[in-house]
Image (spheres, rainbow, N blue to C red):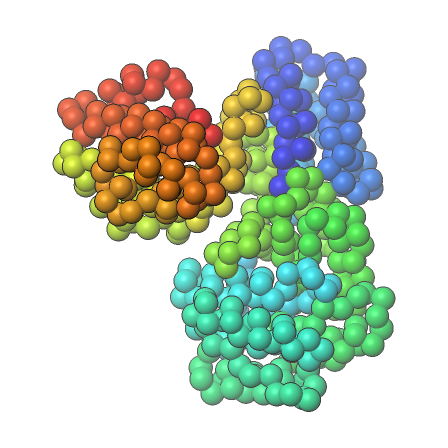
Length: 454
């Protein structure tokens, strides 16, 4: 998300850095570029106007022009206003109620409610240590009930049955009673997708809300809908007392206009964003960190949290021990590292959280390709266990078999083996005295050999 906006604003930031003097004219010129960038990102026009007016008012005051580094001061003002536009600080879920705390998910058809319910359940179980149950009140689509049951098994939480022919209210009240008996901390209720203009469906969810009194009523919104998503959020906000928003499919939205507009239109905080299809791909929404990402300043705090939560420490320790003892780094280890990167959202997601990546040359950024990671994994998966440990035995006939098995070309197998040979040599240097310095000298400022975008 925000790739296009980030590129445009990073160029603006680059021009501002080091400016010894700012005038009203070049502030206006800068804000024209910012305005165009926001409009191209599908941010609502009223939001853009308010944003640029507030930045201009602060920029023309002593806050910017009166400082020793006006360029840097203007960047700070833009970052602060971006943060304010999205809601100042991240807001978590409210658990200040007698358990089970009920979380009701509402939204349009196809917005990702059922998947978001499973992602949220997994996050609450693994990171908040909550006992969670889910239930589907989508009485119009039996497949949705089955989908939730399958996802609940995947994330390790209970999924209560939805009785055939029962009303949504009856199903929800039965699930709530069962959750109380079983002393659950949280009950997540998935509802039927509906259109805001469908009065009967909107009445149903109003009645459901009135019957169960959820602590959290979250509107699940497809970020790729752009301004349509924001208008729909407004309609739901008028019909229901929403407490927050979950943005889905943000990994497929290069613009990000919905994220920058929805808070201003609804007054409700974005609490989470879906960053992939897997059930672990749900992140808390921190406006200050997102603003830093948009301006190309990275998001190191989120990256650290992600490493803490998603990296298999036991596996990482085993690889580190092997390298330190000089026992070598084999293709099976490399395959495991690729999987760890995939669990963290892939190279594209990691690059977006590193400071300064927006300023990398275009030919470097274009090589960051998550599809290449999948191709490398497929090649390694087509090898025998012996070949992964002893790649030197992979000669012509084996290469042909591996290429056929992975749907690639022999040249790609050769390239992987060459890159891996370079990586092994670097790892051997790391295992020796002064290994880190030796590794840095070996890299000579280049990306590490064997990275998927080399």
